[in-house]
Amino acid sequence: MVRKMSVPPMQLVDYDGEGTQLCAVVEEIGNITLKRALIPEPAEGEVRVKVKWVGICGSDVEVFRGAREPEFISYPTRLGHEVAGVIDKVGPNVIGLKVGDHVALRYIWGAFAEYVCCTPFSVKVLPKELPLIEGSLIEVLPGIIHAAELGDISPHKNVLITGQGVSGLVMTQIISLYSPRNLVVTDLFDEKLELARKYGATHTYKVPSAESNTMDIVGKDFPDGFDVVIPCLLEGDGMVDAINATAQNGRIVMYGCIGTCHKPVDFFKIHKKRLDIFSTEPKRDIDNRAYFDKGLQLVLDGLVNTEEMITHVVKLSNVAEAFKLRNEHKGDTIHVMIDCET
Image (cartoon, rainbow, N blue to C red; front, side, top):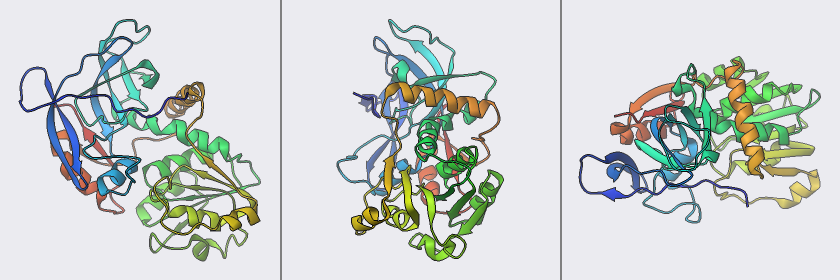
């Protein structure tokens, strides 16, 4: 069975003292607060990571907003999965990893805290010369690289990416390396489209609202639609727009739009167009690790920039203000990083 996202257990306590740490808890929709918890001890086969940086992902924002269904999440809950830190303790029977290693984590949720424990599967050792703040976004690269490969992109195909948030901007950098004929991106904000052009987009379009029909905006230039459509939006409703924008015999790779879709989906249109729809998380553990390696190497080679889109840095003690900031859909707010070192 393929491994999935997990939330490491954390014992909350009602006192502040030695052996305790700060952690963030979403008590209810729209309310994230700081709690005290025991600093965890790594079990057999685990390491403990002193967390330094955690990015606020769009999925964190969706949970904060209450936009995910109960089968996905229940409250109270902990958030945070774009993690970079330093191993500060190694449990029994762990080989290779050692105290002092700089690491990025994947498949760990609930890391807006000072310490988390996890198994080596979730750990990618980073070169110490790479600034840790640039390491946290490596977590998104396995899914993004897998999405690119599922797209079967080649130089004669036109590709559309809807949404240029954090993951969308990383997606644009990766897809440009697959050399599509045209790489078209859309977003609500000029600031993000400017970065997208720098990252390899051949065409950028500003959409007037989140409810806009993409083909109403790009259809004059691309009347037949797109061979590959990769939605990088949060809400599931974007899949209806993606279906409309996909060309005959094209494919949709669902990096985003994994939230609930509240609009009617015309499955006959999918059949009529002969569309293929793919999800993006690797289906085998070995692939997940391979994409982790490849993603890190692209960053180290200077081909993917994970630092330039960081617009705000906020201390863990101000996590509520950070979520409020990230939840304000604005062009000058792209990636908000939480500094968990207290």
